[in-house]
Structures are given as C-alpha cells and as structure tokens.
Image (tube, rainbow over all chains, first blue to last red; front, side, top):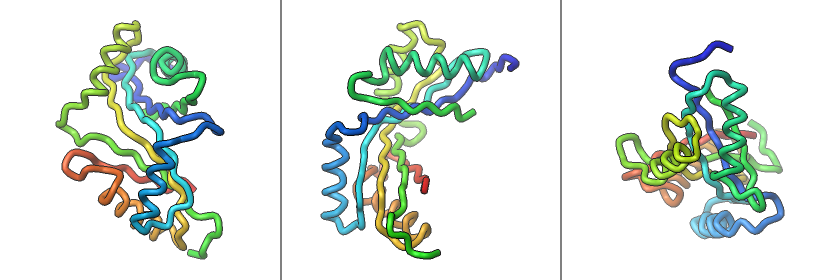
Length: 86
Length: 86
C-alpha cells in the first residue's frame, strides 16, 4: 500500500478479560437500574483514538499491538481490540 | 420491529468535546512518543457495552441518549457516540 502523508487513525479499546470482576461496569449497571433503565448488563472499558505516522495499514496494526503490550493494557488482566478506522 | 428476548447490545463511547484539553490523551501521546512510537495524536475516552431489554432498535437508541444525559456523560464537557451493535 502507498505511504499516506496523513497517517492512519486507529481506535483501540481496552476491556477487562472475561471472567474478571468489572467493578466499574457492575456499579454502573446498578446505578442505571436504580434510575429505571431496563439494563441487562453493563461493561466499562477505555477507548483511545490514535493517529500513527506509518507507511501501511499492516504496520499500523503491528504498532497498535505493540502499544497495547507496552503501555495501553495490562496483558495479565486486559484485552485490546484494535480497529483501523481510516 | 419484533420484540427480542435477548435485548439490544449497545456500545457507547464518551469523549471530551472538541476544544477541551484532553489531559489523559496528551499524557498518553507523550508517553508513546517517548517509547519511540510514531504518534501524531492520541485522545482518550471511556467506552461502555450495555445490553438493554427493550422492544425495538429505536427504543434502544432513545434509552441510550437518556443514559448519556443522566449518567454516562457530563453534557457540559462530554459527547456521547452511540452504536447499536446487535
């Protein structure tokens, strides 16, 4: 793929791994139920929108995985979901 | 649309409004640059995955807007992005 001067825009979500207690999501769920919303479940996570100056979509994906491992997520408890949006 | 026993799954992102200082995003951006990543910019937000027991997609969207106004976001500084994913 050709180099792009404007970079690649990524969306990276960081969620707790399945099976771990999502205290923030649970609290939110209870608060929403108390407010009368018909909630079945709620999970909470973080989201990052990052613009990367790389030459290809493939490289953008690789850098995203490295950013997750090095800084954005704790590999013991978190899972990252990477989406290259443009 | 027919009622669905399993509910609607929503993803709701909460971002700071444009023009406000995103301190967490800025800190992240600097940390990623320090680690050698080719970052142009980084923004930070929160993401929620919520399952709602409602009868229609339209109702799911309306409840999501109300949840944003009442609890998930501060309308003065935040903007919500709602996506009905299934």
